[in-house]
Image (cartoon, rainbow, N blue to C red; front, top):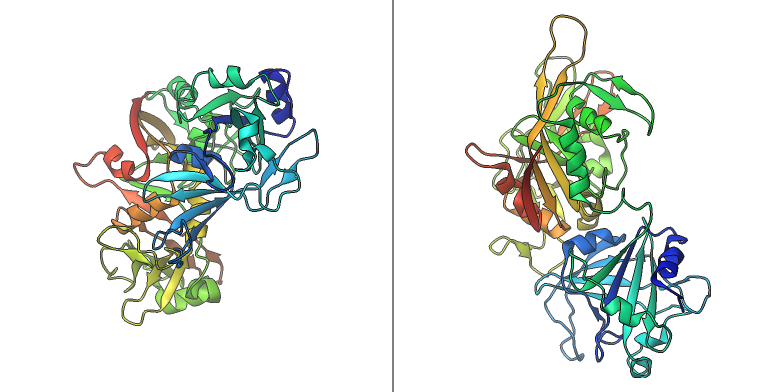
Length: 452
């Protein structure tokens, strides 16, 4: 497809709902449908691309050329469309990014298979006739669009190849799209807004329920988080996307941080429900209010004395703290004696919940002040330290579980009237004399500390 300028290229992808454009100069003798397209390795890039993450068990072939016996991989299946020749976007149903985490490297694969209108310049038997080639990715919230510019079809190849590399991943060029600032990962812009809030000011507990609406006073245990988001103009939401400028905001009042709260998707609790689970594994509330409860710190380091359960990662090598190649590394809350799975989380479920939403995260210390006398809500201040993590993956999350750094600390209950409250909290804690950046850094490619 021909474009008159980089501006027209940008506008074309913007019209498809894209907020980012990434461009890769393709290798002359590689980067085709047979060899796959080499993409280096960047967890930040992976996190930007929307898709379904799954764990693929090793190849069992011992004779097939190029087979990779004994090596598991992570697949990021994309909803990917080629836009070629002015025709309607054509889906490439098998397109995916393969994460060879052992090496590590990533490759784009399956991008021609089953597609009605794919670019011929990516076929190994045809690529030489096109000269230099550049692959263009347009990224929207849920879809990825692509085209290939070549010496044969475009005069923009020189301009693109000679343009500056993208700081996040030097193998790519990056074009900004107008009005994409809220989606683009931009720590400086978010830090600027946090600094405008300041670390010495007190703010009444509040919540913003709708974008652009008025804030309301808030009472409850989540006041610190809702207040900070309200001050930044972020409405209460349960979106699977980051809060602002590509970052998830996490506030914490103590040495413990709740990372996320995904419910299990197999095991006794999933099959029988919370009430049955609490009847079997829970206990009466200490206030003798007729409630049944389940809580306590559960990790991979030992059995929780309160419940008799512990965390395990199946198909996981304890010594190397990595997949053993026998299957998907699912997380189990298990009775070590009977081997019954009380609750389980598939790798795909954890990858979906952790992935893109936490690709960039800012952890902000909050301080609570009770205002007495009177009925007014609590007040909060924030900072001065901000812990900023960038680049993550489901495997890093699993490795932190394997080390016992990330643990399950639920707050489930069913009251006397049978009303259920589910609170499946995955947390990290800072030990005495240990800094938060060292506690959080195993979850990210990079960790920085800023002050506001």
